[in-house]
Structure formats: structure tokens, C-alpha cells
Length: 250
Length: 385
Image (cartoon, rainbow over all chains, first blue to last red; front, side, top):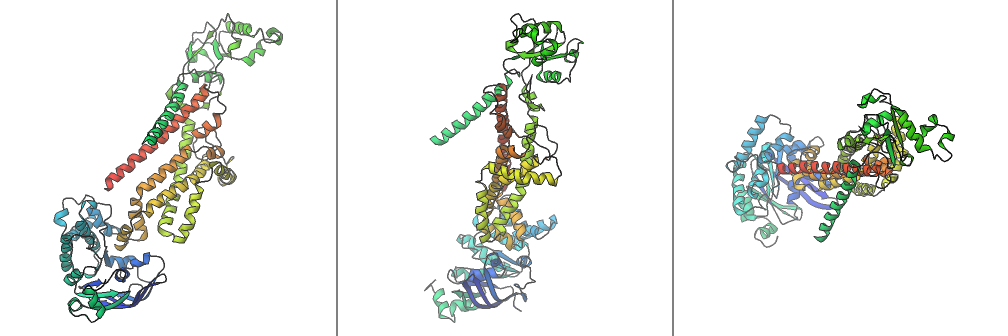
């Protein structure tokens, strides 16, 4: 069974038809990269997977999105429970104006975990998972804003991991970071793959080629093609894909 | 640079003159100009406190031994009492024998205390003019009676006025803050754009209504409502003042808090929601902490308006200078007192200066509150970053 499955999804911002008939599937414990020029709908698609677009007035969805075989847009699906299972990391590091510890503990606390020992344990493991522990272990009480951009982004990943999701959505997570921080996060992706299904939106062709198992190319709100990353980058089926990855447009 | 220096100088000057005038009340005798209190020359009591004089004339003190004199009943004498001692013929057609008769009376009655005008003081006055202590700062603040025009001695106790001001303001802020915050949360986080675009200008319009109009509204709507709801003899109570002030403070609180809440970065809210937090958790844990300084600013300005507001309060609180025990009693606030009495107080007199001293107290209260809030919010900021 596929972990995430999208069937004939059409999505509208008011009158604007943003996604046209998207059908694709992702297996568990894989990394799927979504590529395409700006405005092609890849971020919109990503935000459908944890119902983040619900927050925008006047949006409408047709079709089905299944995670673990369940339609996440079903009336009986609770968006808050869904988001616990589907973590998200944003384009710019967006820690809360709280301490490093509190940032990671936030998701646990809002989900009703009050046992201090459990919280502490999860915070420590999550920070270790993102290889940030050695850098912050002495200043967990300090404000998250004292960290560098790359550290903040890893903290945001730790924050998402702390609530123990099974899917991790990443919306251009390294676009605001320097090359060294970027490579640290890419290394991290390989390790996280064992436990999580990862969907990553990226503008960086090399990143998609390096870090992902599968790649989906979006253009003008349509899914042009999706295949193994190797195939997409060596012998794509579609002319448009080839033009894009070879840098002829976009 | 120049304009801000000029502004600062003007502010300092205003405060300086306020305090200079206000200090006058502590340097003057608390007896009306042109009047005197006299006792028999044989009376050993030389000096009295203003409150003792009041008690004597209220007949709460009836014997000189209670104020450190001989065991001798006190005989009160006001100018109008003269007819009980002398006939009109004895006083003369134009009261020309008045001074002599007072003189005679004072020497005859060992227990007398006489209050009369300077112009009836005989040239060979045989009585002894009583010395009156000046009002002390402590008495001024802790005195429970405010009768600035009482005779023979003015009662300048501002405690009921301070209490009235604080009660009404506290009530107003207790009403306005929760409602204001709720409205701000609704407008910034819950309402659709159309609703917000309609409601927000309306709320801002409320800030532009003159306070007298609020007073009318209070008098016509809120006062009768309170009277019938609580089954009171009069509806003009501290609560009516609080409600009117709360309505007046709402636009400030709502506008400032809502602006601050809307400034919460979208990324921060999305981060919270993406972790499975509900909308309320996000508001409570992310939006409100992030906008705390804006909310505090709104609350300070709201309180500031409540404490300093004059006209609307004057119209609906009933203005009884009595220490209130509940908000359902008439109260009198400092600004209302100043506004109502300044026109009647003789320029430069004791009453006039007492009103300035009230202004000083008001200034100190608002200054203290601003300072406190500033301290609290700067501490919070320190903690946050």
C-alpha cells in the first residue's frame, strides 16, 4: 500500500484553478522531491497534505488525498490529529520566541502531554535526531533566536519530529540557508528516511538529484511526470521535464 | 529635536505649576478668608486641629476637657446666634453695636467658641483668637470627609475621592479588558475579512464620540438599567460610571490589541498549527504572547482614559463624596470633583488650592500606573528574548 496517495485532485483559490487533476502516490520511507518553476503549484500541493490550505479563505478541493489509506479530507478526519501525523518544516526557520527547549516541547504540550519526564526525554531525542544536541545541550534554556539560521532550521525539524509524525513535509527547507547548513540538513534527510516518509519541495535541482528517491515535476498546476529521481534526471519521458532540468526555462 | 525639547519643557512646567498651586493647601489656615474663631481669654486651649473644630461645631465634642482644656461645656456661637442673646434694639439699626456685643459675650461666657467675620471684631477685642493648625498631608490623604466649603472649617479629606476614582477605573478596566481582548481576538483571528472590514471602522468611530455624548447615553440607558436590575433607589452609581468608561475605553483597547495580534507573523501561527495545535491553542500560546506589548499598551491607554475621564463620569456616578463599599453606591471621582467645583472656588483660596492638590494626586496615580505597567512589560520582554 502507498503511504500517500492523491487521486484526481483539483484545487481552487477562489476562481483560480491552481492544481489540475493531480494523481500521484508515494511509498513509505521514501523521499519524494517536488520540483518545478515558481507558481507551478508544488507548495500548494504540499500544503494540501496536512490541510494547511484550510486556513485560507475561499479555497476548494476536488478529488481524494489518502494517507495510510484514509481520506484526510473526509468529514470525520480531524485536521489537528492529521497534522500531528504529518509534520511540516517551512521555508524560513520559524522558531517561536521561546527557549530552545520550549520550542521543541511546544508540540507535545499542545497535544496534551503533561508528564515532564516524557517531555524531557522526547525533546532530548528529537534534538539528537537532528544532530543539534552537541551544539545546544548547554543552552536549552536560551532563546531559540540566539541560534544561527541553519541551527534554527534543524531546531524546527526537531520540533516537528517531537510529536512523532510518520510523514514529514518540507517546503524549501534549505532555501534560506548557507551551503554548509544545507548539506547538514541533506545528510539528516538520509537518516530520517528510515523512520519517516518525506516530501520535499525544492528549487535546487542538485538537491533533488542528491537527496530524493523519486521526483515529481510540476508545471502550471499540472503534474508533468513523476518517476525515480535517477530516471527524471537522466532520461525523462517528457520534453518539458528535460527542458526544465537542463535549465532551458524556469 | 527642538520641538521635542519644547514639549518636554512645557510638560515639566505644567507639572511644576500644578504641584506649586497644589502645595498651597498645606501652607494656609483651613478657615475661610476674613473669618476668625475666638474663645474666652480665660480658656487655656490655644490651638486646635481642623478636625477637632469640626467635631466641636458638629457637637460631637461638647466639653473643653476633651480637647485638653478645663472641664467646661462648650458654647457654640455663630453670627446668626446673636439674636438669642440680644434684641435687635440692643444691636442697633445697622448692627453698629455688633462688635461690642460679641466682645461682651466672649468675656461673659467662659466656654464659648465664636465664629464670626473680621469686620465684627471690636477694636478693643477682649477675646483670644484661636490658632488653627494647617492641614497636614497625611490628614489630607486620609481624611474621610470632603466638605471644602463647610463652615466654620473646611474639611479636605480626599480619601473618598481617591477611592471613588480607583473603584470606578478598576471596574471599568475589569469590564473593558476581557470584552476588548475577546473582540480583538475575534477581529484578528476568527472573523472573515468582510466582517472585519465592516466592524473595525465602526469601532474606530466610537473613539471619536465626545465624552458628553457618552454621558448622555449612560444617563438615559445605563443608569435606569442598573437601577432596575439591582433594584436600587438611584441608578447613578460607581457601576454606571464603570460601564460608561468601559465603553469609552473599548475602542482603544480593541484597536491596539487587534493591530498587535495581526502583526503576529503568519509563519509563527502556521508553525503552531502544523504541530497539531488547535486554533485556540495557537491564539493562546502564540498570538497573545507575541502581541503582549500591544495589548499592554492598549490597556494602559484604556486605564489612562478611564482614570482621567471627567464629563461622562460626572454625569452618571451620582457624585456623593462618600467612601464606597460596593460599586452600587454613588461615588465621586477626582476629575469630576475638579470639574464640578473649580468654577465655584475663589481664585487662590483654600478650596481652589485643594482642587489643584487633587490634580497632583491624579497625576501621581496615572504616573504610577504607567510606570508599573512599563516595568512589568519590560520585564516580560527581557524574559522573552
